[in-house]
Length: 423
Image (cartoon, rainbow, N blue to C red):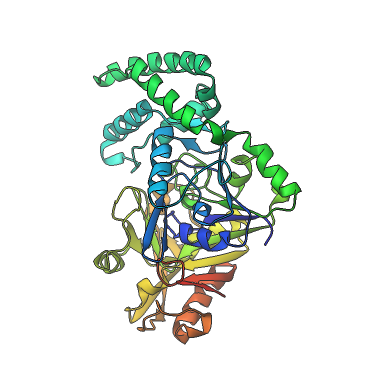
Protein backbone atom coordinates (compact mmCIF):
# COMPACT_ATOMS: atom_id res chain seq x y z
CA UNK A 1 0.00 0.00 0.00
CA UNK A 2 3.02 2.31 0.50
CA UNK A 3 2.85 5.82 2.00
CA UNK A 4 -0.39 7.63 1.25
CA UNK A 5 -1.61 11.17 1.81
CA UNK A 6 -5.37 11.45 2.12
CA UNK A 7 -6.89 14.88 1.47
CA UNK A 8 -10.32 16.42 1.17
CA UNK A 9 -11.01 17.49 -2.43
CA UNK A 10 -13.77 19.97 -1.55
CA UNK A 11 -14.46 22.30 1.40
CA UNK A 12 -13.98 19.68 4.11
CA UNK A 13 -16.56 17.34 5.67
CA UNK A 14 -16.17 14.95 2.74
CA UNK A 15 -16.35 11.84 4.94
CA UNK A 16 -12.59 11.43 5.34
CA UNK A 17 -12.89 9.73 8.74
CA UNK A 18 -14.72 6.76 7.27
CA UNK A 19 -12.25 6.44 4.37
CA UNK A 20 -9.27 6.78 6.72
CA UNK A 21 -10.72 4.08 8.96
CA UNK A 22 -11.11 1.80 5.95
CA UNK A 23 -7.59 2.40 4.59
CA UNK A 24 -6.01 2.08 8.04
CA UNK A 25 -6.62 -1.66 7.92
CA UNK A 26 -3.80 -1.83 5.35
CA UNK A 27 -1.20 0.44 7.03
CA UNK A 28 0.94 0.48 10.16
CA UNK A 29 0.97 4.17 11.15
CA UNK A 30 -1.63 6.94 10.81
CA UNK A 31 -0.43 10.56 11.04
CA UNK A 32 -2.44 13.73 11.58
CA UNK A 33 -0.37 16.63 10.25
CA UNK A 34 -2.42 19.85 10.51
CA UNK A 35 -5.49 21.54 11.97
CA UNK A 36 -6.85 21.38 15.48
CA UNK A 37 -9.99 20.30 17.28
CA UNK A 38 -12.02 22.39 14.84
CA UNK A 39 -11.99 19.37 12.53
CA UNK A 40 -13.99 16.24 13.27
CA UNK A 41 -13.93 12.75 11.82
CA UNK A 42 -16.94 10.49 12.38
CA UNK A 43 -16.55 6.71 12.24
CA UNK A 44 -19.46 4.30 12.72
CA UNK A 45 -18.60 0.72 13.66
CA UNK A 46 -21.62 -1.48 14.16
CA UNK A 47 -23.88 0.32 16.62
CA UNK A 48 -21.09 2.53 17.95
CA UNK A 49 -20.42 6.06 16.71
CA UNK A 50 -17.03 7.64 17.36
CA UNK A 51 -16.44 11.36 16.89
CA UNK A 52 -12.74 12.17 16.76
CA UNK A 53 -11.41 15.72 16.94
CA UNK A 54 -7.62 15.53 17.30
CA UNK A 55 -6.80 11.84 17.49
CA UNK A 56 -6.28 10.08 14.12
CA UNK A 57 -9.07 7.73 13.07
CA UNK A 58 -6.61 4.85 13.06
CA UNK A 59 -6.98 4.69 16.84
CA UNK A 60 -10.06 2.51 16.28
CA UNK A 61 -7.96 -0.25 14.69
CA UNK A 62 -5.94 -2.52 16.97
CA UNK A 63 -2.20 -2.69 16.49
CA UNK A 64 -1.90 0.67 14.72
CA UNK A 65 0.28 3.56 15.83
CA UNK A 66 -1.34 7.00 15.61
CA UNK A 67 0.73 10.19 15.55
CA UNK A 68 -0.30 13.81 16.11
CA UNK A 69 2.37 15.68 14.18
CA UNK A 70 4.17 18.97 14.60
CA UNK A 71 1.81 20.82 12.24
CA UNK A 72 -1.22 20.34 14.49
CA UNK A 73 -2.31 22.88 17.11
CA UNK A 74 -3.44 21.16 20.30
CA UNK A 75 -5.80 22.17 23.06
CA UNK A 76 -4.42 19.72 25.65
CA UNK A 77 -7.50 19.89 27.87
CA UNK A 78 -9.73 19.01 24.93
CA UNK A 79 -7.32 16.28 23.84
CA UNK A 80 -7.34 14.69 27.29
CA UNK A 81 -11.15 14.80 27.30
CA UNK A 82 -11.12 13.01 23.94
CA UNK A 83 -8.74 10.37 25.30
CA UNK A 84 -11.06 9.87 28.29
CA UNK A 85 -14.14 9.63 26.08
CA UNK A 86 -12.50 6.96 23.95
CA UNK A 87 -11.47 5.04 27.07
CA UNK A 88 -15.12 5.08 28.18
CA UNK A 89 -16.02 3.56 24.79
CA UNK A 90 -13.48 0.79 25.25
CA UNK A 91 -10.57 2.33 23.30
CA UNK A 92 -7.55 2.47 25.59
CA UNK A 93 -4.83 5.02 24.79
CA UNK A 94 -1.14 4.57 25.61
CA UNK A 95 2.27 5.21 24.06
CA UNK A 96 1.94 2.09 21.92
CA UNK A 97 -0.99 3.47 19.92
CA UNK A 98 -0.71 7.28 20.25
CA UNK A 99 2.26 9.66 20.17
CA UNK A 100 2.19 13.47 20.21
CA UNK A 101 4.81 15.76 18.70
CA UNK A 102 6.73 17.83 21.19
CA UNK A 103 6.87 20.53 18.48
CA UNK A 104 3.10 20.90 18.05
CA UNK A 105 1.80 24.26 19.26
CA UNK A 106 -0.68 24.70 22.09
CA UNK A 107 -4.12 26.31 22.00
CA UNK A 108 -5.07 28.29 25.13
CA UNK A 109 -8.40 29.71 26.34
CA UNK A 110 -7.23 33.21 25.41
CA UNK A 111 -6.91 32.08 21.80
CA UNK A 112 -10.61 31.20 21.86
CA UNK A 113 -11.54 34.58 23.33
CA UNK A 114 -9.55 36.40 20.64
CA UNK A 115 -11.15 34.18 17.98
CA UNK A 116 -14.65 35.03 19.22
CA UNK A 117 -13.95 38.75 19.41
CA UNK A 118 -12.44 38.91 15.96
CA UNK A 119 -15.47 37.15 14.50
CA UNK A 120 -17.89 39.41 16.36
CA UNK A 121 -16.08 42.54 15.21
CA UNK A 122 -16.37 41.53 11.54
CA UNK A 123 -20.17 41.53 11.55
CA UNK A 124 -21.48 40.53 8.13
CA UNK A 125 -17.89 39.96 6.95
CA UNK A 126 -17.26 37.16 9.47
CA UNK A 127 -15.22 34.15 8.34
CA UNK A 128 -17.40 31.49 9.94
CA UNK A 129 -14.71 30.17 12.27
CA UNK A 130 -15.55 27.52 14.88
CA UNK A 131 -14.24 29.92 17.57
CA UNK A 132 -11.97 27.23 18.98
CA UNK A 133 -8.87 29.42 18.89
CA UNK A 134 -7.21 27.69 15.96
CA UNK A 135 -6.41 30.81 13.92
CA UNK A 136 -4.96 32.81 16.84
CA UNK A 137 -2.87 29.79 17.89
CA UNK A 138 -1.39 29.49 14.40
CA UNK A 139 -0.95 33.27 14.47
CA UNK A 140 1.23 32.97 17.59
CA UNK A 141 3.20 30.19 15.89
CA UNK A 142 3.95 32.32 12.83
CA UNK A 143 4.73 35.35 15.02
CA UNK A 144 7.24 33.14 16.89
CA UNK A 145 5.62 33.68 20.27
CA UNK A 146 3.79 30.34 20.45
CA UNK A 147 4.13 27.78 23.22
CA UNK A 148 4.72 24.15 22.23
CA UNK A 149 3.72 20.80 23.67
CA UNK A 150 7.30 20.06 24.72
CA UNK A 151 7.27 23.16 26.93
CA UNK A 152 4.66 21.47 29.13
CA UNK A 153 7.36 19.02 30.24
CA UNK A 154 9.60 21.85 31.48
CA UNK A 155 7.45 23.63 34.10
CA UNK A 156 9.78 26.60 34.70
CA UNK A 157 10.17 27.36 31.01
CA UNK A 158 6.46 26.85 30.42
CA UNK A 159 5.55 29.18 33.30
CA UNK A 160 7.85 31.94 32.03
CA UNK A 161 6.52 31.72 28.48
CA UNK A 162 2.89 31.60 29.59
CA UNK A 163 3.37 34.57 31.92
CA UNK A 164 4.60 36.67 29.00
CA UNK A 165 1.78 35.58 26.71
CA UNK A 166 -0.90 36.16 29.35
CA UNK A 167 0.47 39.63 30.07
CA UNK A 168 0.35 40.55 26.38
CA UNK A 169 -3.08 38.96 25.95
CA UNK A 170 -4.60 40.72 28.94
CA UNK A 171 -3.55 44.05 27.45
CA UNK A 172 -5.52 43.11 24.35
CA UNK A 173 -8.52 41.87 26.33
CA UNK A 174 -8.70 45.23 28.11
CA UNK A 175 -9.29 46.83 24.70
CA UNK A 176 -12.30 44.53 24.26
CA UNK A 177 -13.48 45.31 27.81
CA UNK A 178 -13.10 41.67 28.82
CA UNK A 179 -11.94 40.01 32.04
CA UNK A 180 -8.20 39.23 32.21
CA UNK A 181 -6.93 35.67 32.00
CA UNK A 182 -6.01 34.19 35.39
CA UNK A 183 -2.42 32.97 35.02
CA UNK A 184 -2.25 30.82 38.17
CA UNK A 185 -5.35 28.76 37.32
CA UNK A 186 -4.33 28.32 33.69
CA UNK A 187 -0.77 27.33 34.62
CA UNK A 188 -1.94 24.68 37.06
CA UNK A 189 -4.50 23.22 34.64
CA UNK A 190 -2.09 22.91 31.72
CA UNK A 191 0.80 21.54 33.76
CA UNK A 192 -1.52 18.91 35.23
CA UNK A 193 -2.73 17.70 31.85
CA UNK A 194 0.82 17.95 30.48
CA UNK A 195 2.00 15.52 33.16
CA UNK A 196 -0.78 13.10 32.20
CA UNK A 197 0.29 13.30 28.57
CA UNK A 198 4.03 13.00 29.30
CA UNK A 199 4.34 9.31 28.22
CA UNK A 200 2.83 10.20 24.82
CA UNK A 201 5.03 13.21 23.99
CA UNK A 202 8.10 12.66 21.84
CA UNK A 203 10.02 13.69 18.71
CA UNK A 204 7.54 12.27 16.22
CA UNK A 205 9.67 13.24 13.21
CA UNK A 206 12.11 10.53 14.29
CA UNK A 207 9.28 8.09 14.98
CA UNK A 208 7.72 8.48 11.52
CA UNK A 209 10.98 8.42 9.57
CA UNK A 210 12.23 5.38 11.47
CA UNK A 211 8.95 3.63 10.63
CA UNK A 212 9.42 4.45 6.93
CA UNK A 213 13.04 3.23 7.02
CA UNK A 214 11.82 -0.02 8.57
CA UNK A 215 9.39 -0.57 5.68
CA UNK A 216 6.27 0.40 7.61
CA UNK A 217 3.38 1.86 5.64
CA UNK A 218 2.06 5.29 6.61
CA UNK A 219 -1.27 7.02 6.05
CA UNK A 220 -1.25 10.80 6.44
CA UNK A 221 -4.79 11.84 7.27
CA UNK A 222 -5.96 15.26 6.23
CA UNK A 223 -8.33 17.52 8.14
CA UNK A 224 -10.68 20.01 6.47
CA UNK A 225 -10.45 20.24 2.66
CA UNK A 226 -8.55 21.73 -0.28
CA UNK A 227 -10.57 24.92 -0.51
CA UNK A 228 -9.99 25.69 3.16
CA UNK A 229 -6.20 25.71 2.64
CA UNK A 230 -4.73 28.99 3.90
CA UNK A 231 -2.70 29.42 0.67
CA UNK A 232 -4.87 27.80 -1.98
CA UNK A 233 -8.40 28.00 -0.62
CA UNK A 234 -11.13 30.64 -0.87
CA UNK A 235 -9.10 33.13 1.16
CA UNK A 236 -9.96 34.68 3.63
CA UNK A 237 -12.77 32.13 4.14
CA UNK A 238 -10.30 29.39 4.99
CA UNK A 239 -8.73 27.66 7.96
CA UNK A 240 -5.25 28.61 9.21
CA UNK A 241 -3.22 25.61 8.04
CA UNK A 242 -2.23 23.88 4.82
CA UNK A 243 -4.94 21.32 4.14
CA UNK A 244 -3.50 20.28 0.77
CA UNK A 245 -1.15 17.32 0.22
CA UNK A 246 2.03 19.38 0.69
CA UNK A 247 0.98 20.14 4.26
CA UNK A 248 1.40 16.47 5.12
CA UNK A 249 5.16 16.80 4.59
CA UNK A 250 5.72 20.02 6.55
CA UNK A 251 3.27 18.99 9.27
CA UNK A 252 4.95 15.64 9.91
CA UNK A 253 8.62 16.10 8.98
CA UNK A 254 8.54 13.61 6.12
CA UNK A 255 10.27 14.55 2.83
CA UNK A 256 8.13 14.65 -0.33
CA UNK A 257 10.08 11.82 -1.99
CA UNK A 258 8.78 9.44 0.68
CA UNK A 259 5.16 9.95 -0.43
CA UNK A 260 3.94 7.34 -2.91
CA UNK A 261 0.43 8.46 -3.77
CA UNK A 262 -2.41 10.80 -2.89
CA UNK A 263 -6.04 9.80 -2.32
CA UNK A 264 -8.68 12.52 -2.56
CA UNK A 265 -12.03 12.25 -0.81
CA UNK A 266 -15.09 13.97 -2.22
CA UNK A 267 -18.81 13.71 -1.76
CA UNK A 268 -21.08 12.78 -4.65
CA UNK A 269 -22.38 16.35 -4.23
CA UNK A 270 -20.85 19.43 -2.57
CA UNK A 271 -21.07 20.91 0.92
CA UNK A 272 -19.52 23.79 2.79
CA UNK A 273 -19.58 24.99 6.42
CA UNK A 274 -19.18 28.65 7.29
CA UNK A 275 -19.04 31.72 5.12
CA UNK A 276 -17.55 32.32 1.69
CA UNK A 277 -18.47 31.77 -1.96
CA UNK A 278 -20.00 28.43 -2.91
CA UNK A 279 -20.94 28.46 -6.63
CA UNK A 280 -23.13 25.32 -6.78
CA UNK A 281 -25.05 25.95 -3.54
CA UNK A 282 -28.64 24.82 -4.02
CA UNK A 283 -31.62 24.99 -1.66
CA UNK A 284 -33.18 21.81 -3.07
CA UNK A 285 -30.10 19.74 -2.28
CA UNK A 286 -29.75 21.34 1.18
CA UNK A 287 -33.41 20.72 2.07
CA UNK A 288 -33.09 17.08 0.98
CA UNK A 289 -29.95 16.41 3.01
CA UNK A 290 -31.16 18.20 6.12
CA UNK A 291 -34.54 16.43 5.96
CA UNK A 292 -32.60 13.14 6.01
CA UNK A 293 -30.80 14.29 9.17
CA UNK A 294 -27.56 14.65 7.23
CA UNK A 295 -25.00 17.39 6.77
CA UNK A 296 -24.59 18.67 10.27
CA UNK A 297 -20.99 19.18 11.40
CA UNK A 298 -19.79 16.41 13.74
CA UNK A 299 -17.90 18.75 16.10
CA UNK A 300 -19.96 21.97 16.06
CA UNK A 301 -23.38 20.68 14.97
CA UNK A 302 -23.67 23.48 12.40
CA UNK A 303 -25.86 22.81 9.38
CA UNK A 304 -23.73 22.52 6.25
CA UNK A 305 -24.50 24.40 3.08
CA UNK A 306 -25.20 21.94 0.26
CA UNK A 307 -25.10 21.99 -3.53
CA UNK A 308 -24.54 20.04 -6.71
CA UNK A 309 -21.23 18.40 -7.58
CA UNK A 310 -18.66 20.96 -8.71
CA UNK A 311 -16.23 19.45 -11.22
CA UNK A 312 -14.48 22.81 -11.70
CA UNK A 313 -13.43 22.91 -8.05
CA UNK A 314 -12.54 19.23 -7.72
CA UNK A 315 -10.50 19.26 -10.96
CA UNK A 316 -8.46 22.13 -9.54
CA UNK A 317 -8.09 20.19 -6.27
CA UNK A 318 -6.81 17.19 -8.22
CA UNK A 319 -4.10 19.35 -9.76
CA UNK A 320 -3.12 21.06 -6.50
CA UNK A 321 -2.81 17.83 -4.57
CA UNK A 322 -1.64 15.47 -7.30
CA UNK A 323 -4.59 13.20 -6.52
CA UNK A 324 -4.08 9.72 -7.99
CA UNK A 325 -7.24 8.03 -6.71
CA UNK A 326 -10.64 9.18 -5.51
CA UNK A 327 -12.95 8.03 -2.75
CA UNK A 328 -16.51 9.21 -3.39
CA UNK A 329 -18.71 9.28 -0.29
CA UNK A 330 -22.42 9.79 0.45
CA UNK A 331 -23.58 8.41 -2.89
CA UNK A 332 -26.74 7.17 -1.14
CA UNK A 333 -27.71 10.75 -0.34
CA UNK A 334 -28.71 11.17 -4.00
CA UNK A 335 -30.74 7.95 -4.26
CA UNK A 336 -34.17 9.62 -4.43
CA UNK A 337 -33.46 12.26 -7.09
CA UNK A 338 -34.80 11.78 -10.65
CA UNK A 339 -32.27 14.20 -12.17
CA UNK A 340 -28.82 15.31 -11.07
CA UNK A 341 -26.82 18.38 -11.98
CA UNK A 342 -23.05 18.53 -12.35
CA UNK A 343 -21.17 21.81 -12.73
CA UNK A 344 -18.64 21.52 -15.58
CA UNK A 345 -17.65 25.20 -15.95
CA UNK A 346 -18.38 28.68 -14.61
CA UNK A 347 -19.47 31.84 -16.33
CA UNK A 348 -17.81 35.00 -15.05
CA UNK A 349 -19.05 38.26 -16.52
CA UNK A 350 -20.46 36.29 -19.45
CA UNK A 351 -17.19 34.46 -20.19
CA UNK A 352 -16.89 30.69 -19.73
CA UNK A 353 -14.02 29.64 -17.43
CA UNK A 354 -12.91 26.20 -16.28
CA UNK A 355 -10.65 27.13 -13.34
CA UNK A 356 -11.89 28.71 -10.09
CA UNK A 357 -10.83 32.37 -9.73
CA UNK A 358 -8.42 32.89 -6.84
CA UNK A 359 -10.25 36.11 -5.90
CA UNK A 360 -13.31 35.38 -3.74
CA UNK A 361 -15.12 38.43 -5.08
CA UNK A 362 -14.83 37.02 -8.58
CA UNK A 363 -15.71 33.50 -7.41
CA UNK A 364 -18.86 34.87 -5.77
CA UNK A 365 -19.92 36.25 -9.16
CA UNK A 366 -19.44 32.92 -10.94
CA UNK A 367 -22.54 31.25 -12.37
CA UNK A 368 -22.30 27.45 -12.66
CA UNK A 369 -22.66 25.82 -16.08
CA UNK A 370 -24.48 22.54 -15.54
CA UNK A 371 -25.01 19.32 -17.38
CA UNK A 372 -27.92 17.14 -16.29
CA UNK A 373 -27.65 13.42 -15.67
CA UNK A 374 -30.29 10.82 -14.92
CA UNK A 375 -30.85 9.75 -11.33
CA UNK A 376 -31.05 6.05 -10.42
CA UNK A 377 -33.92 6.34 -7.91
CA UNK A 378 -32.92 3.09 -6.21
CA UNK A 379 -31.40 2.54 -2.76
CA UNK A 380 -27.63 2.01 -2.78
CA UNK A 381 -26.98 1.65 0.96
CA UNK A 382 -27.14 -2.16 0.88
CA UNK A 383 -24.64 -2.51 -1.97
CA UNK A 384 -21.40 -4.20 -0.94
CA UNK A 385 -19.70 -4.42 -4.33
CA UNK A 386 -19.40 -2.06 -7.27
CA UNK A 387 -21.46 -4.38 -9.47
CA UNK A 388 -24.33 -4.24 -6.97
CA UNK A 389 -24.74 -0.50 -7.54
CA UNK A 390 -27.42 0.54 -10.06
CA UNK A 391 -25.89 0.94 -13.55
CA UNK A 392 -26.94 4.61 -13.68
CA UNK A 393 -25.23 5.23 -10.32
CA UNK A 394 -22.04 3.68 -11.70
CA UNK A 395 -22.31 5.92 -14.76
CA UNK A 396 -22.66 8.97 -12.50
CA UNK A 397 -19.61 7.98 -10.46
CA UNK A 398 -17.51 7.41 -13.55
CA UNK A 399 -18.59 10.74 -15.03
CA UNK A 400 -17.68 12.84 -11.99
CA UNK A 401 -14.34 11.02 -11.61
CA UNK A 402 -13.55 11.55 -15.30
CA UNK A 403 -14.36 15.23 -14.91
CA UNK A 404 -12.13 15.42 -11.82
CA UNK A 405 -9.24 13.64 -13.53
CA UNK A 406 -8.47 10.72 -11.22
CA UNK A 407 -9.37 7.06 -10.93
CA UNK A 408 -12.17 5.82 -8.69
CA UNK A 409 -10.88 3.84 -5.69
CA UNK A 410 -13.65 3.69 -3.07
CA UNK A 411 -17.37 4.42 -2.87
CA UNK A 412 -19.26 5.18 0.34
CA UNK A 413 -22.96 4.31 0.52
CA UNK A 414 -23.58 5.07 4.20
CA UNK A 415 -21.87 6.01 7.44
CA UNK A 416 -20.85 2.59 8.72
CA UNK A 417 -17.53 0.89 8.12
CA UNK A 418 -19.33 -1.91 6.26
CA UNK A 419 -20.89 0.52 3.77
CA UNK A 420 -17.63 1.00 1.87
CA UNK A 421 -17.08 -0.42 -1.59
CA UNK A 422 -13.59 -1.05 -2.97
CA UNK A 423 -13.65 -0.50 -6.73
